[in-house]
Amino acid sequence: DGGITQSPKYLFRKEGQNVTLSCEQNLNHDAMYWYRQDPGQGLRLIYYSQIVNDFQKGDIAEGYSVSREKKESFPLTVTSAQKNPTAFYLCASRNSFPNTEAFFGQGTRLTVV
Amino acid sequence: KNEVEQSPQNLTAQEGEFITINCSYSVGISALHWLQQHPGGGIVSLFMLSSGKKKHGRLIATINIQEKHSSLHITASHPRDSAVYICAVNSGGSNYKLTFGKGTLLTVNP
Image (cartoon, rainbow over the protein chains, first blue to last red):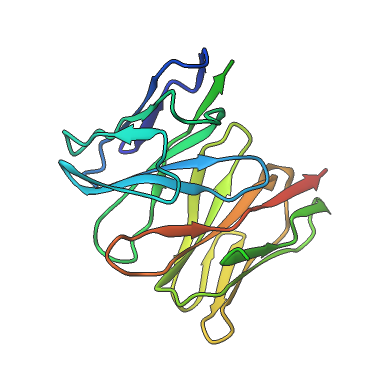
């Protein structure tokens, strides 16, 4: 079945450590996105990529980094520079044509202690 | 002010009731999405619409472009409908960004 896979579902890290969240899709979508979700807030865009080897900062990119070396993969690294990294992270993908549906992963809940 | 406002924030219903969740937005859009998020976090796309009305099973979504308003209706609600329902808009442009509402937590009691 086609879809988006995020791993792991739960992740614990010590403060000051970098951590990488995985996102893989087999939908042949060009565009991929990373969102952060905090209690009481809407999803906020961290980074997005519309094509391999290219990505753009979203609204809250500080303290995060991404890469897009393959069409199907868009890993997100939460660096030690991110001041409040504990959150729920969602990856999404969609076809690059206008007005197409977005498909979401199951999310990764990151807790930094 | 958030560009996408949902109401109500929380909604509790009895099984079988008709449910309405509202979404208002302040920007011009090319499409509006209704999403469902179950406990555990995964999100599923329910509808994407740019005009009129769409129906899928017991779910109906409508949009009024002139009034910048959309509604999601659930007929004959069931406890398994309990989830967070999120409205998101695509304001167009070349980056296909989505702007999300804060969500409506729906609880349907048996």
